[in-house]
Length: 470
Ligand SMILES: Nc1ncnc2c1ncn2[C@@H]1O[C@H](COP(=O)(O)OP(=O)(O)OP(=O)(O)O)[C@@H](O)[C@H]1O
Ligand SMILES: O=P(O)(O)OC[C@H]1O[C@H](OP(=O)(O)OP(=O)(O)O)[C@H](O)[C@@H]1O
Ligand SMILES: O=C(O)c1cccnc1
Image 1 (cartoon, protein in one colour):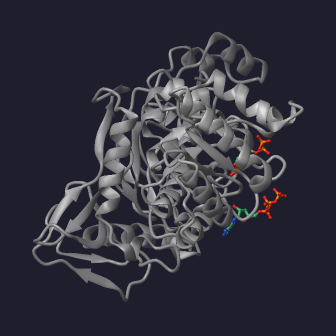
Image 2 (tube, helix red, strand yellow):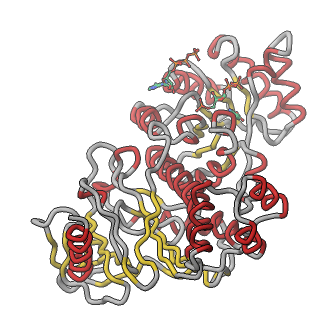
Image 3 (spheres, helix red, strand yellow):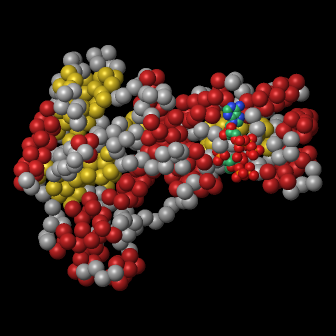
């Protein structure tokens, strides 16, 4: 994996950190919230991911000698640079579980650290969490459409460059079974899978020989690409020939892949011909600019497609391209902090906080998460975060605390989780949300409320800064 040293940050973080150091404020303790304001893909939920990647980076987040030489050449203060020689992230991370279902406005993760540490980790934290959460959410939607069919990530070549590495990880958490991305497979223990390219077929004078050579070399694992010249007139009959030859040798053709044309129509024709040739076990894979909507349509048309290969639209998080996650100061030097805005929705929530998922007496979701001050319990009432006329009462509800310490004093509180376990957890958590929250068109709104005490604290601070600056 790329070695993320502490220069993996924006310059303004270092410039601010220098001032904190010079003013003797570098030991002041801060709490920052990571949250986002808008759900991606106009969907009803997001799936939080990237946490393990972040923790791994933070465990060894320091400046190398070359980093410090570079900063020295930029004219930064030599005493400050001396201090950075020993810099290491020694703060706490309080987080939602990776794979959990998360919503706008409420903190997804918090950083508790000194001002320098908290500021220097902001950029990498946003870089990792915004991207992986976006892609895991996209993958989860594609999984929803695909039902039980196999999903393979084909996105590496079309990803935003090295983003492919973490996109493959994120896609697996969201429900993909395999990836064509070999390095991600190796590093994250994701099953790898592959078929063949058009170039392979083109490089031969005839398609049949191309298929035969491939089958001979990969007797257990051949998926033949049948659309290079003509799917029904050439690719399919040649694949059937090779499939039968393999069968006579006691081998089995694994599948064929369709990559153009009307995928549902072609899959039906191919399935029929394969079955008639006694090749019922040969699978049909499809690719070509798939996403959750095309896959949903292909399923509705009952195209007998067993495997979907999804590239571009998955790894670029189409059409959103970015999650708008932000990192805002909530507490510093023993005082709650707020950021005011003309736009009410951009007011921040001050203080050290906790988030609770509210369930009714039967253990079912009530459709709301409540944000409270950290020490509060027994949430009976909550308020709309930005609309004073709206509030919600809870009767006889249980509260599940969603934020937990995952790093203390720069060290993880638990060993790293296996990707497979994160995926299984995520699936279980999403299954709690009814169809209304998961549908693609105008999904049901999951509510986020703030407790009476938090509202009071926020309003007091707001008035304080408003009058101070009047
Ligand atoms: N039966 C179908 N129902 C809905 N969408 C489909 C169906 N078959 C294919 N598609 C999708 O329609 C789009 C067709 O893309 P495009 O117009 O590029 O066709 P193509 O067959 O790939 O052409 P080319 O031969 O140039 O590659 C792709 O996103 C594909 O996944
Ligand atoms: O459409 P996507 O969802 O992005 O899926 C990946 C695409 O990448 C490959 O095409 P490409 O033309 O790059 O190579 P090929 O000649 O092997 O088909 C593959 O055949 C898919 O069509
Ligand atoms: O294995 C495949 O078929 C594959 C891999 C990457 C991109 N498109 C297809």
